[in-house]
Image (cartoon, rainbow, N blue to C red; front, side):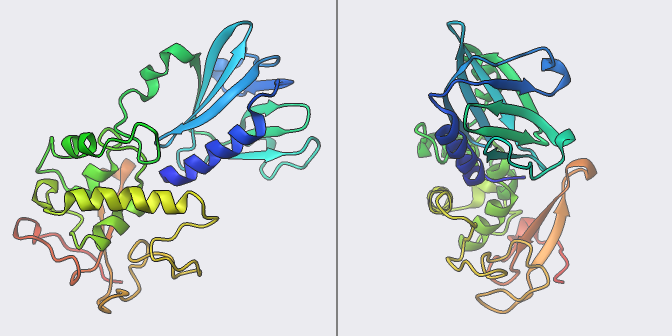
Length: 275
């Protein structure tokens, strides 16, 4: 699933391409909005909220918000009129076209049209946005510690605590903080520093064409531990461990270095393949 910085870049692309322009086409190709037509609307702006995209438009004097989410397979592409689509037409869920631009949302996990005044019904549950104007470190820390026994990696991934972290950043943050991913979040003495590092990572990567937490943009050199379970730790050479967690339908992998991120006594039983 895309991380918050990826969604931020998608919002910026849509905002630069569509804002202030009148839509000649506004098709929502999902059953619940099959009869909706945004043609004639003026695009006000597109903003990101964690991993959510909010495209605000004005139509006949009313403000509406197109709420979309990329989930696992989704992507927005902005094309010139007549330009060939990069994906099959049956994957298109939204088509927003102006006189000189065509924004197509492919395989979007969420497509929802609602009055702008009701946006909180879809994103109001989210915690402070790491890349948003509402960022509040103290509030994020308060939310993270409401369940001190929860594994730190799960607490970081919970968008109700802070918005924008996905599995990749959660794994990388635990590594740079020297924290075992399954340690209770309440036991992490450097939690404020970890949260500040999260914001720094996303802020640096929001301007990059590729994500990197090591500072090295070369292929296979960009991450410390994420998806490197068959490789030695970049710091100590110990094979990176991996373990699956969560129910089968939402299973995720944890990555860590057993030496750089030793397991506390209360999670000593956690085992993982080292590749």
